[in-house]
Length: 261
Image 1: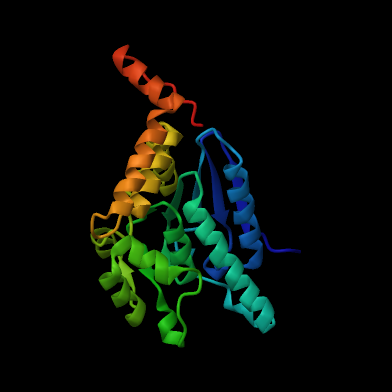
Image 2: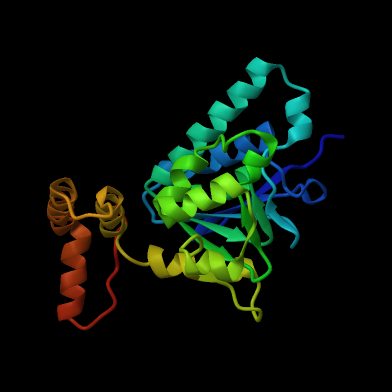
């Protein structure tokens, strides 16, 4: 009987992608990449403002990285193909025109942390741990982690994690900006992730994506490229039907009803 590796819960406000390999600490297989690709493709085709939440089964691990047992059964060409596929998929997820949130329910190591970093936002349980420990195996992160991590926490902190392979606890991860929110203990993590998502998807998707595009160009210094990107996105968002609706709703003292297109 084939092992179940993931579930997809299709909801009105989001798709919940859950890795269901608790005994393997939710390690990434080719089959899991298939499922995640399906979720990304579905949401890329939509214009209704739904988002994606990625979570692992149980409370031990969000994802412990790539499944080394699967890799051992592959030829070098097959292993390289899986690596390239995962990297391309994570970059695609990061740039996709919908909001994605990693609900980190336990350790996020190696490819698991790279998956979390590929999401737009990260909310974490209080007991989670974070690491890119590949250097301990004489390797480096393979799923764009050397690019995602500096972009999120800055080059100095990223380099410290990358060359030591050390595990970072939640309080330090929050302080360095690796995670956006720490979940409270009174409500299930998934429900808090859904609430987090809804606070964003209630707004105009045009405006949210324009903000994301502008911030993506910004660096440590204000540049002409960044200012030009903001200028272009101000015009794009300002011309949208959602902008007209938002201004009219403000004037009429009512809740705006955005079309998310």
